[in-house]
Image (cartoon, rainbow, N blue to C red):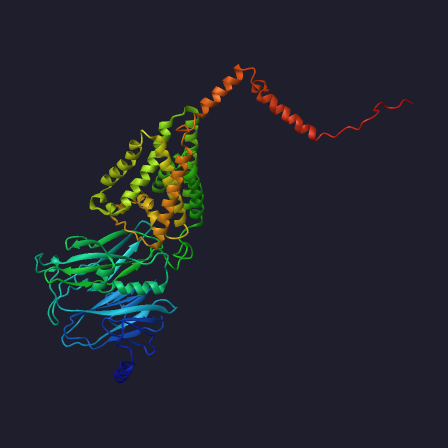
Length: 565
């Protein structure tokens, strides 16, 4: 067997293009796949055929290697040995192994296997590091591998959390690794720092080719620092866990760069990616972003918002938005009701609140109460936009008390500022809030980051753990287009209503006073034709009599007296 293996390796080495180029595409049929340091390779794995991998001609100045393998959503297992044990193998879609090299070692073997029956498309690369580079996961005490360079990722509707093992200082071949927790001086791993990076894939692109292509920009230290966004820097005293807002249907790649400030060297962990959804789910998978109920709800909401945007000043009873939002938060936190039922109850509660506001205005004509609701809705949107900016990621706002006091202060400030100009307040609220409802409807059919202006606030209200999450979102071509549409609708609606209301009373007259005044006028003015209108009861009876006459059979004309015998 040893001779056969050497013959196969010699044949592979003789093949042109195996060791050259930035990318190698292949699917080995002999059970052995050869890799080169720093070269990406595409290949397929099948479940019944675990493959052996080999890396040859390792330089003598290399002290450790990190081999990483990636797939889109199908798990792959890599192992140091043919026996796939938890302590010697890693399984997932983004996994890696660290090889601590012995003196004079110039070749490495490992094994790969797919868990699905269908062939799995993979991309892999081995990366080399010297003795001065820190070792990612070298002080692992939490996960199964002795040295674990992997980033462990978990997500739910609210947040995505990444965890990783602390790193250790590098060391030469054949020497003992530095102790992890004996002391905390500058000559130990406690001097290391961790830079967490985030990289967004193109919006609405769920293809495997796009993912594997962009993963190449997140594997090596120079590429990560050049292409990704540095979110936070952790010290050895910080918890090696970071949370982000989940972006369902949007591909995101995370990586961590461990840096030694004394030697000015660094190394990259194995990057991890997520779409915050499941490709293989029967319903609600990554391809279908919104439920049918969500699309119906926000489509109707957008139609109503479009009407408010251009005609809202004369029909400005928008209390249903304010009450509906808080009612959704209340029933979500206090009851286990299903999502579709919650949407229906939210619509019902909002409609009832809108009817109540109309009734209060019609009967009492209390303008200030109605304008307070309108101003709070506009203030809520402006406050949400404020925290949608990088200001929302400041450490001080991870405290719930500080966040909600600041958020509420901005929301209340808006109606206070416009208290002397209520008509302008109402027109601005109609134009901005009404046009933003169109943005929410678009998000039901295709991803857009602008929906997270209000969705992040909703997540913060529903989840107590969301306060520590970073709320970064991508801002790409689709978002610029939708932002332009939002701005165009808002400016058009505000301009149209200002021009139409010029010269008119500031607000529609009080309906109850008009009705009462008209009734008194009809009673006292006998010359008014409406004075002679019969009461409602007599009018209804007359109308029913006319309807009854329509169904009565017409009697024949002529003599009706019977003949005498």
